[in-house]
Image 1 (cartoon, rainbow, N blue to C red):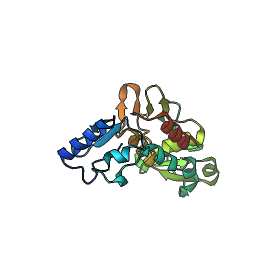
Image 2: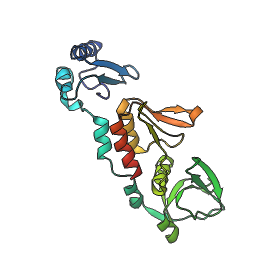
Image 3: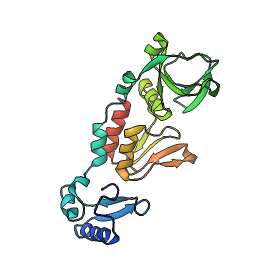
Image 4: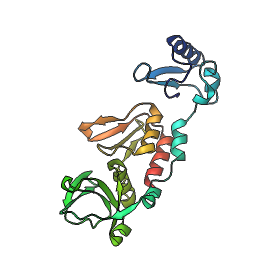
Length: 223
């Protein structure tokens, strides 16, 4: 798959020529997304042959076989981020809200005495923060954004907020818990499509993720 329209592939005739070259090699080419801003998706051609098929139209620097898998492999284990977050004193508040992993919902608590993700009420300026057992002992917290905080809390407490179906190649997370940062980018890169909200299932789906890519990504998010 070649993400985006690289230089030299801006005209319809060139896209047509690329499609013919791919078809002649036994593959299939589709364009996913808005015209001029979509993703060229090439399937049915082994990675070793793809650069030769497209070399007359696309610079080889833009051809990266197994890009999502390579990106997922390069990411650090999510747990490494927990210790690298900057710590600050815990602010006082009349109450806090605690993120319950089992129901992916918020509950009001009087004290922030459990490891996990919290958010401050708006009257106290709002904001999300993570607390480990060490933070609780030291009276500190680490500021995070919501999606990252949810997955860090899940990692820390051994309750992953994701599920993968190898039969459909779909990776699901709860609504409001999109995969954070480059972890989400790797999942999107696998299909070239943005994740889909499914309110009926209270989830967000990342589609067309190969089992090996999913295994690597899940391993990084849970270790």
